[in-house]
Structures are given as C-alpha cells and as structure tokens.
Image 1: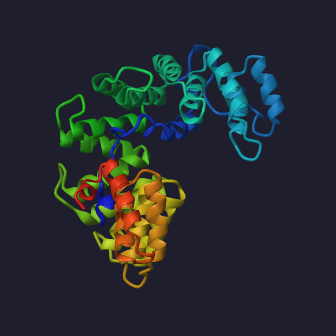
Image 2 (image 1 turned 30 degrees about the horizontal axis):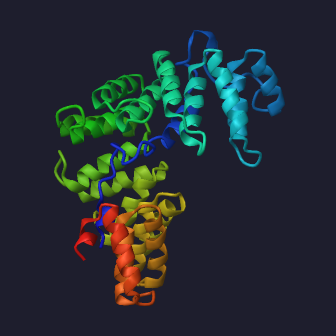
Image 3 (image 1 turned 90 degrees about the vertical axis):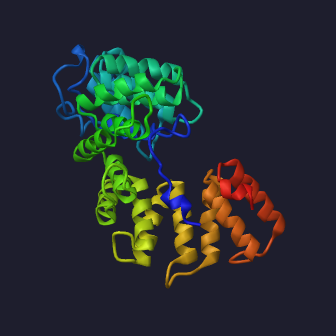
Length: 355
C-alpha cells in the first residue's frame, strides 16, 4: 500500500513538463550577471524601480531598459492583476535588448503557461540564453533534451548542458547531472559522482538535490543506508520548498524511519505537499489517514487517494480500489473497484494488473 510514498521520483521526467516549473523560480531569481553584453551593469533592480508604478517600468522598457522590462513582467505574473500575455511581451522585449535572463523568462512562458506551449521556440530561446552564459537556461534546455520536447531527445547533449550549467553555478544543472549519473542516462552509472553533485547542488540551495541525496541515503544507493540522515535531508528540502522532500518527510514520520514516529507530523508534511500540488503527497496523506496510529479515518483517505488518482498517481487508484473492495470509508462497489484497477494498471501500477 505504501509503495507510492517510496517511489524514486527523479529528474528523468515521466513527461516533458515534469521538470520545467522549477526553472521559473531559478531563472526569475537569478541576477543579471550572466546577461549579454548590452544588459549593462549587473544586478539588482534599477534605482527606484521597486517603488515605481508598473507603467513607469513599461515605459522604461520601451526606451531600452531591459531590467525594467523584467521587473514589469514579474509584476504582471503576480496576483491580483495577473496578465501572462503582457508579461510574455515584456520578457520578449528584454530578450530583444540582449538580456539573457529575459530570453530565459520568455522561454519559460512558452513551457509553463497552459495553451501557450511552444517547445521548439522555447528551446531556441533557452539556447540563445545559454550561449549568452545564462546558466539556468542551460539547465532548462537540458531538460527539454531529456524529455524530447521541441528537440530530439538526447541525454548526452542534456548532460553536457547540465555540466555547463553546474559549472556556472546553477544548482539545477548539478542536480540533474547527478540524477543522470545515478541512473546511467547518457553516461555510465557513477553513484559517487552523483552524490558529490547532489551535495554541491544542495549546498547551493537547490533544494530538490537535498531530497535526491536523502533518497540515496534512505535507499543505500552509493552510500551506507542512513535513515536518520535521509530524514534530515528531506527536512532541508521541505523547508526549502521542495514538495517531494515534504512528501518523503511525511512518509518518514509515518513509518518512524530515521525519526520518532509522529502521526501529526506525518499529516503536516504530507498536507504541505498535497496542498502545494504535488500529487504523490496526496497519496501519502491518504496512507496516513488510513494507517497512522491515532488518526485512522478511511473516508478521508479515500478523498486523498481519489485526488491523487485523478492526477495520474496509479498507487492512489489502487489504494482507492481496495477501499471500495472492502467498503472501508466508502460503500463497497465492485464496478468501481474494476474501473480503478484498470486505471491503476494503465498508469503503470503492476499490482493492479493482477488483482
């Protein structure tokens, strides 16, 4: 039942979009030091830009100030007043002004915004930014090569791009390259190299890498198994905003793996992941409500299994099918059982195929 919580979610994505969203955070947060030659002195917003109305930023953008284009674009991505079209135009203008962060942000819009996907154009923009030494865009382009989105799938090229990103200080590149070494994707398996890359990325505050490293310690991959250290790394990842880390930390508290068993903390961390949109966290939350000492509430478990199942988590479909089979928290319903097992099987949950 708990297989979903232990699954090794790594960075060779199950879909071409699996790794894109973190790039928005990385690209949006980086300085302009890696921008092209016309972007002017590095860093920081232009004097007074933080207090200026967005209209003033737009005027400055049209006058040729790439930094103000980016500042205005970011404001249009905030709520209330979110306007992704205007943001995209402003980022594109920054790119036209040879600001490489602007090119990366414009590309990210073409990947992240539903209905506006254009992976081939995004790849071209990421490539331009990467050639202009924008490290995060090199990592973003690597992800497109891993997923074959807008470009022909090529793990070797992806690894070279991640290596460039990592060397230039992008933790995302270090982490993804570590995954490649762990899994043998375009390179020979080298767990020691993977560990070093995860450690480097984690120290750079790319928190998904902390979770990756924790998984290796939990599983004994390239290191002696150390559940306590694994839980500590999951906590670092979770506190840094990596929802996969929160999921695995919740699972650790449920199982008492490397930490003292604590059902309430299991609920807390799994809820953080689920509410944040990480659907495996919803499945773990279902397991907590179904099995945790002092909490047992199969009707709540059914709600979270259903949420995970509808989002494509096969283990959620399987666990929900078992609740319908047993009439636990939901009415017994053989037809529902068969439908859920079929969906779980289709989603790759082998146990469901033989039920």
